[in-house]
Length: 129
Image (cartoon, rainbow, N blue to C red):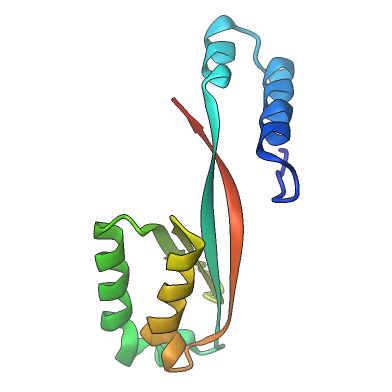
């Protein structure tokens, strides 16, 4: 599986995707689908959690989930979830860097020490039309 980095221009990434498709697609339908691929920029907000996150998050969980819900309703947050076994990180997919920064500034988990560090990364996702 190819990993595209943010250092590559979007057109170069799309060109590499097309090359990969030609190598792996062996029928017309597959090639047509690949020709409709578009690169979309999203933003990942990555949380590192304290070791005892399941216990420490309890008093702040409702506020955290309410924030996610409200931002999903307005389209700012596209997807969110924590890793399991161990529950040491969470990932949020947002529509803009500004919204990722705003989210991290007001999230009850961040404000109350449930999150030990945050990172915001640009993510080039592929969408087929």
